[in-house]
Image (tube, rainbow, N blue to C red; front, side, top):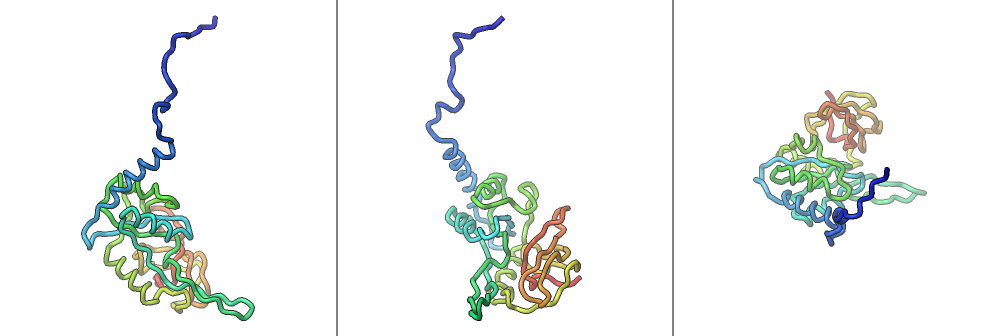
Length: 212
């Protein structure tokens, strides 16, 4: 037997809202991001966030426009030679795929930062984020500013598979294995770092690592 319900009253869920879903989510994220504008002391630690490769400056600009304290140390990239012509080096981030931020830690702040376009996540997670000492960030930025991390700067020669220690930057004191690198001591290396119980590949200048 088929039951008929002729007197049901109601309306579609959210039909009473005049705000579109996308706009509402954007407003919620903006409210969360305001928590990341709460500044801390000048010697407070920083947090590393993973971003899409090539979007480091875009993320930095978005965060700064929102009032979040942000750093992306820069350096000279490689020179290219094509048909006998030298293409000058561009200024690029010292570490691909990472942006450093600093604010008063809170669930709202981390969720707000994670909601920014091109951000992948917070290193270590929102519950137990990786804290980078301000002293390490200052050294990292100074090395980038004085050219020590430039692509063409020669460093120690490493071999694929070699065990290394990260000596500078947001992952200083982490150990890892070299996955790929040049054989002339220049440029970057892909290092698989033992990060929070899982191997994580990170691209960084050879100048930021040392032999174990």
